[in-house]
Length: 218
Image (cartoon, rainbow, N blue to C red; front, side):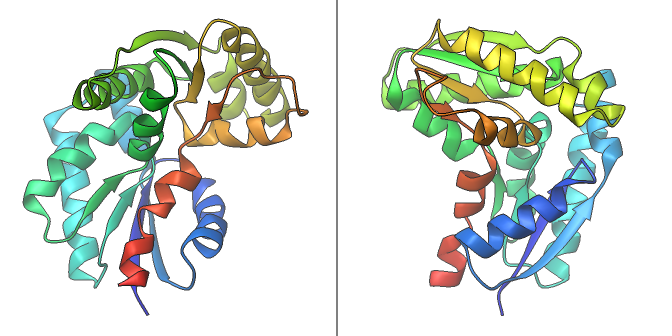
């Protein structure tokens, strides 16, 4: 059975991605690694060389353990995932890459919604690179949901989801497509009643996991 590694920075995400792997990829031997300090350090200091080095170390350890690919599920450290590729003998994917490629093909005005300011920069840069590769215009409008991250950290998931949903509805009125920058925000969109949001809302987990399909298909 194909072994893959998923590197997380939030303890609740392995269960979410286990379901997505089953639905989108099929039977795989999944190794889930969780290191919350990767995100904490990035929030506090930006992308430190030491943080990027640790991501590469995890990816090499996963390859040594037999993983045929590594998926980094945290958008805030997506840059580290890209840097690791030069030093890791298996593919290293960032979860938000397919979402960004899709978004710049939908429309010129792209809204980026996050609950962490640390995630906005990496997502913005990725969108601009993908737009430039396609020769597409890209006007980015950003918003950080005030209080949502603090609510989630305090275990108040309902309050987190309400804050995110309110900002989704507001920002969607100003753009052609809306991108949710963090995997933890994806469930909010699924819970919104049909017709409340007039533009496509893209999330990273499901499309990010689909990048692993070729391993099983091959």
